Image 1: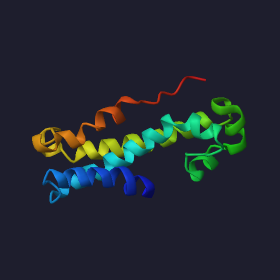
Image 2: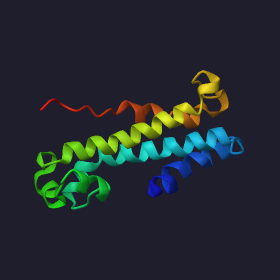
Image 3: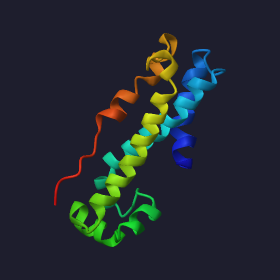
Length: 136
């Protein structure tokens, strides 16, 4: 989450600043959560690539909780024991951040103020990547 805040969220803060909207606590808070959701979605989409290069992008506390062996992921990819549950949990973290960002706009009936819409359009791609669990 710290990496996401320092990258994606910071980029959204910059965009708000360029539009003269950085003084809005509501928009900044929503941008923080959206940036985290975007970063996690990007990491999950890139998981196969990173695993093929010997890098695990899912936090260790999540993989450990689901008994995921990094070596198995590097060798077996999506067939590694516990990886589906770890991916689902990490995707749930992203979804929670996306829901929190949306909650920032409840007083405007869920609508992002017009001048800020270009910044928050990126939420569409983050929301478009849903992880579904399959029945065992």
